[in-house]
Length: 224
Image 1 (cartoon, one colour):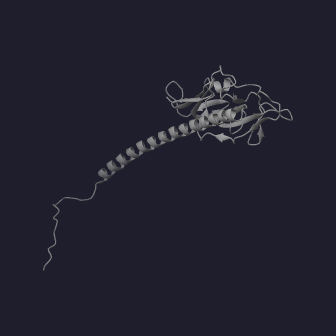
Image 2 (cartoon, rainbow, N blue to C red):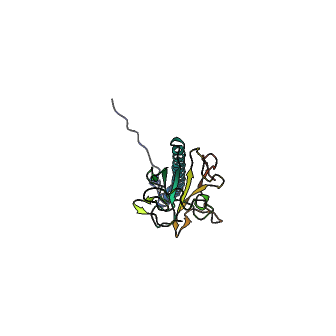
Image 3 (cartoon, helix red, strand yellow):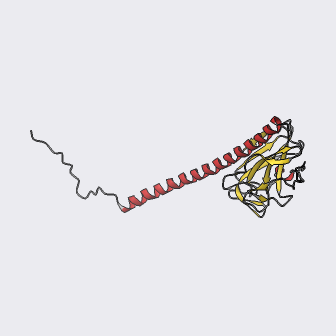
């Protein structure tokens, strides 16, 4: 049985290859689409980092509150601020008070993801309503103000920290003073937050707010 081979006849003058212009158009389309994908991934990455930061601070505040209630003592959520350390405005820890012994750190320092800081450029009431000096500095020997170090280095500026104290009923010790922590995309220079993403008015284009309710100590979060 003879096999029959199909023959495709190409019309005269027809070129099956792409022209240079067609290739350039395809490359331009691919580049445009890739640009949109990169922008979307970058935006998603920033949003994810802010959400992770908000969850981290909220969970630490909840841990401090629960410890105060469970152990019938005072606890503190603390933040180094304007100390000249790598943790300034971006690291949190929890302290516990023991009568006769003073304050001791019960959690390790938790740093916010790279590119996220506490906004020190707005009315961050977590900073402005921080107790100064730290209450109940009665540990032996007498504890310094504030009673914590950052990665083994002493915190020397007595006004260069922020803290809020939880009491045994779960509320804040100074329940009438507002407590808001705003997390933003940026970095700190000279004690001031520099935004990496801002709107036309110069305000942060994206942020994560955590409000600690004075009477209950519970955290309330919000996003724009």
